Length: 360
Image: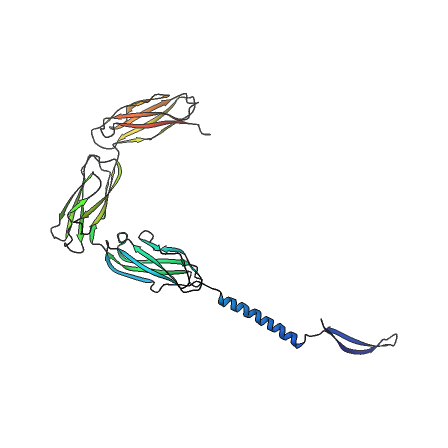
């Protein structure tokens, strides 16, 4: 550290008469060579930072043709396009995620998720034409480690035209009787003319019958769908395919049907409290159809549960009274109530009975 002495003022002491001269001591400024060295070090430091920043490697995702137009196609066509993903950076490109805009109708297959500098990877994108109708514009988002463009959008656009227009596209038969024949009509119109004729309708279920005929204007077809009893109870579905020979296109529709059970039973499971007192529960049975069937009797399979049956206030309604006692030591399944009917499709209905610890 350098100091320099600066001459000060001369003054005389008032009492002693002695003269004194003040001096000023201060830190000396660095000489010019040291200032030059300090400035040079600073320049080198900032230059190193700039060089390091400029030479740090980054990945760069590039797609030469990010928009694909597949034009106008029929709904039985194969819609596919291959996008080429190129890494124009000097670090490895990592494809982190691919998000199709339509998750139900589009899918993709990526060749590799890691692309070296200067290399490419193929991205195959396909669209299911059966899931779309009319104008199609699907955006696919590609997320990567590209710092400049972390999300790149590519698109597939076009128009899907059905070869056959099916009206209605789906048939639903609700609340029909198990022994009823129900007829529904479906109209099919060809968009490519009758040079691709339809000749048959098929399904993998036995409770449907079909009749296919050309309409009078010779521009379409009429499909008659008829149920074939006895019908299964509950909700049933069937896929119907209408086609010609093996080379001709096909069209499809779905048929759904709900047949209520002949006998509705409530509750479907009985529960008693695990106590010693005598308890009573009631099972309600209602006939849902006008079929000539009835409940014949009800019984239990033994144990601490007994029952008796009586007719309800309306025809086809039944009340089954179930009794139980001395259940203090019992928990879980304790028996079954068996309801006998003269329905050949469902001659017996079983209702399980259980005991559970009483609530607080």
